[in-house]
Length: 347
Image (cartoon, rainbow, N blue to C red; front, side, top):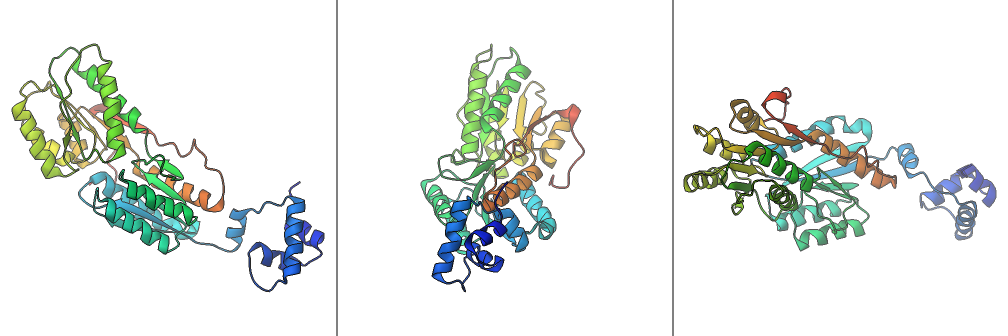
């Protein structure tokens, strides 16, 4: 049977109020008495239930989500999910806030992380870029005792507590397998549209895609990656030039955002043989699936990711284990025939 505060009080010969002061490091206890209580705690092997203590104190957990600015519909959907979760957060003793930083800007991201550390928040969740200064900022959060979760794109080796997102290498392999199967024996190269190779999730998706394509029975060229910075205008220009310069283009894999520009560049084409696979179910990709401009969309549930990040940060703040099975983010594959009803965050 686990020892209780009553056992500590009896062992040390003090009141429950004194035990409570020692456990919560409050003043009003003489040094000799504090030493007696701490000796009783050690002798009994008492392990404090931090979650229960925080509940008793009605502790509120301020959690900060740091998300990139811009027209990326998935990120805007992620932000909407954070704000939606915030409506219910008082009942769950959490206070959620969103900080927006320019996309792919490591310096701005570091400033936002350091500002959250200075505010002594209970946890930070952020979409990160792969840069040494970002890893250093995460290390500062860890040193301050603030749990840190990476969202969507991981930064393994940075000291973060947990990654919330899909297996991006598996996502890329899935896209490559679908591309190879859809194209069959049709010849022609394949283009890849990315946001930025500074994002680990984009690099991992590319690695998985290339591995799957290399394993296909029909060998084909994968053209150099087009980096559109997740900007619809840049994506439109890059894909338009690629289509004009590569008349035998067999497929396009869009592994980031900027799909509004991709769809605009594809509109009006009559080449039904071009296979297009993209990520994230948004208003643009849904419409393109329905009209046949896009063949398949790989999707991750933004709502699940936000809820998972909150659960993980709360558990870490309380020193509790994380339920790995509950926090595993599923990769969904949508084609025209299995589209779900449109959600509120498909902008």
